[in-house]
Structures are given as C-alpha cells and as structure tokens.
Length: 74
Image: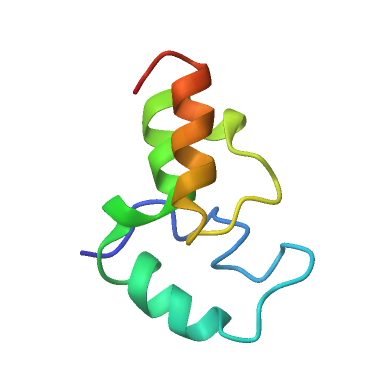
C-alpha cells in the first residue's frame, strides 16, 4: 500500500541531505509498498509528523524504536 505521506515526505521527494545511492530501492520498499516498516512512518504515526527527525531514513527502524521507547510508546 502506498504511504499516505508521499506528497510531503522529504525522503520520497529527495529533500533530505545525504540521500543514499539505493534511495530508489528504498522508496519502492517503504514508500510504495509496506509503509508500516518505514522508520519515518513509525515515528509520525505515533508522535506526529513534526516529531520525525529530519535525518531519519526509512530503514532506520532501530532508531525509530529508540525514539518511541523514549516517548514511552514501546
């Protein structure tokens, strides 16, 4: 299922600093398929889009879990 945040997502719209070479593959995996496994989506859905770190990439689920754990949501 396509992520509902595609239009505003800095990662999907190539607005993040230091985009990985494999960005297109990550977009297919996280943005256009299973967004529930996207670190950015995980944080946004629990804490709000404004609490997603600007440098959080979709594959950084461990970091997302730490953010949620710090907010007592895991």
